[in-house]
Length: 296
Length: 260
Image (tube, rainbow over all chains, first blue to last red; front, side, top):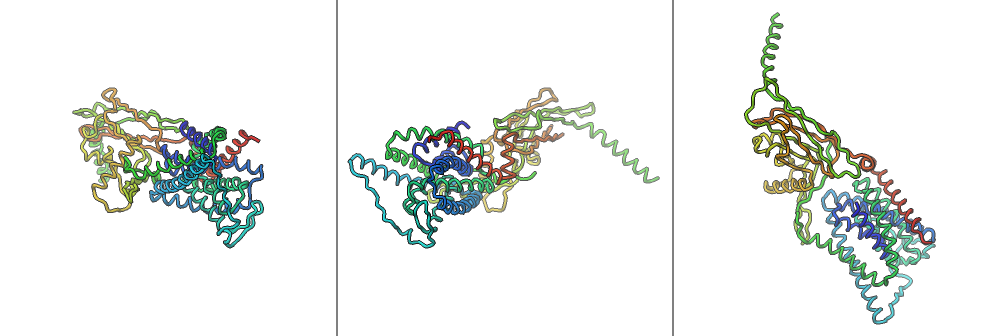
């Protein structure tokens, strides 16, 4: 119980420090500490609801949410999480859920970790040589803007096809419900670079989408596999809320590129740990799952 | 007239035959220290004492050799799958499985001596007493070698023993007097809930002389019970409550740590 609380605190600290949701660190931590992957994933979806809700409230007050865009995104997100929760149950029945979770984490954390590592190393060496950061000057339009079914979003001042929005929203909903991560670290870059959503509304909008999608995933997981543990979720919430405050304070004293380098190394090491578990021969080849309780 | 005579004859014969039979065998009186185990949020396991008395009367035939007591505690049945990982494309993946149905979720055997010293293997098998005699019926027919089946069986039992859910503990029943016995059965924190069967066997000369049956109820209480029941009986409501709790916590955190 105290260990879980501490883990919530530690992950909250990191999420405050790096400005991330933390689901992609919290789920692995729970799995490594011996909580069944299915319970870890489903419970972190609940925890994500809590951690994103205070953010959403803050962004509503600042009027920094594009509600129309968020609505389209979260409709897609709900579809995605339906598919995700369904697949979650099927994989659990087949005994391959743990494998899929591990493989997906190796892939995601590996790819994102390397990208961040390269980016932050470049930034650091640029600072050393005193060079100018190359400001990306994206063209006003890219291939995404050629797609049909366009919709106007006044708050974001964009006019784009609903197809990429739907793809982004449903992918995040799918991955979130199957892997137990909010997905902000994937959605924010996608919204900025693919849809050209202005940075001042992007975080609030994606947080609102994450909040609703994860709330739906929590309910679906409860119904489908009964893997949500409210007590565990509450412990994590309280721990992470407190940890986040300390993290945010300390994070302000560290340079951005150094923070990103640290986060990259952290992400990579978690990914490597998953890979290690898959590749190295386990000490116990056998495992037992309880399929159902029988009536007496 | 003939009929009456016949009946009285049969009854008389029966009585004459039954009376010495009844007084010959010992009877076993057994009881539990508690018929309920309550799992509350700070439950870390407990002990249940099974105690009893072997009653004999003047007509009981004298026995050579000691009495032996065997106590079996069985949890509610469940269906389980045992998986075995294999290296596929360099990754360790759950490749083979065996599903057993109707296995006890909890199983503990206590005895006065090692089971093999008390009686023959055949008797133990008939009584389904002892870890080796647990009937693990594979669910669905799959082709597999006998060696394979043994390996899966062994792995399953080992996992359960490691979790503290299965146990065979010889020499744990103390005879307080020639006819009084007691044993303390550890119930671990991860015990499943439901109705448990407690069976007490009285052995002498390798034969069961008498049996006693008790029921033990393991149930969640208080907050644990509330969440457990809700999650199982009304999962949609459970999910909604989880979301509301999360929203409330998030809102509260926002209020407490609000900067502007």
